[in-house]
Image (cartoon, rainbow, N blue to C red):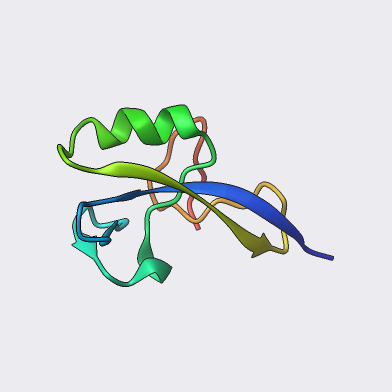
Length: 77
């Protein structure tokens, strides 16, 4: 059984999203996703002119995280 989860992504001024490869793209399916808004804001600080956007998505695992970066807050997809 799945659930809706809240995630955050970084967008530039023209609506492109920051991807796992650290470039901006219109392909939102490849967006780097954050579980924590503060972590997304910290990362966005490295990219002037960007904003952090909140969105909801369906997940079969409530804590599933689609980022390829590893940290204590992030798990590889």
